[in-house]
Image 1 (tube, chains in turn blue, red):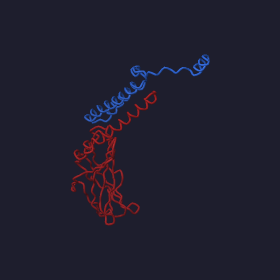
Image 2 (image 1 turned 60 degrees about the vertical axis):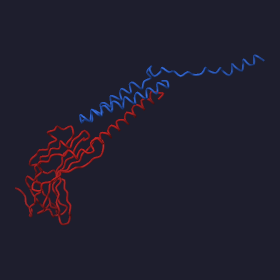
Image 3 (image 1 turned 120 degrees about the vertical axis):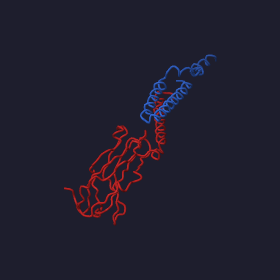
Image 4 (image 1 turned 30 degrees about the vertical axis):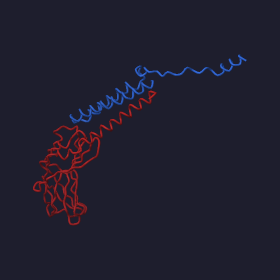
Length: 84
Length: 181
């Protein structure tokens, strides 16, 4: 998972859990039944876990561009000797 | 957030934090409930005084009572159960305040509306009315209904029957030991 993917994953589970919990709370309040809140919350956490925990391809769209690898020190020194 | 385990930990514990927040909100949402909704207590009165005796040096009275109390208004979504109990109060020369629990019951929020309305006649006491000394004879005893709210989240709080009608709830014990045969 790249850095942009980590940010996306965190925002996703944050809002999914809060929104489902909030909607469940409002429905539960008007129905006067706390178990409804718990069910909505549980659905939110399960969706978050499925969507945000595994390393899905959508989290790997911004791969980090590393610098080219530095040449091996030994080969550099041996090539220098040859010049002398 | 770079490994599966870190993300799983974040999702689960953020979820639990949200659940805590929702539970607290539910607790706060009903903070004024008992100011607006009170159980309807139609009847709480002595039916029969079975006996008043000296029991190992202390006075003990056994009685039965009638009760008609609709506890439905006390329930809301944050009440798990009510612990309802009948308290007998009286005053003696040596102890000014005496409160004795003589009967109790538990009503759960999953119980039916009918079961939340306590309607029973000639209920025999669960716990005898026992004085700390031997001063029970001839005293005026008042029966009062009290109840504890046990919430899903938040504080346990008590409430009690208001506007007691002395002609119904108060009775005088006989001045001599006696019993029904």
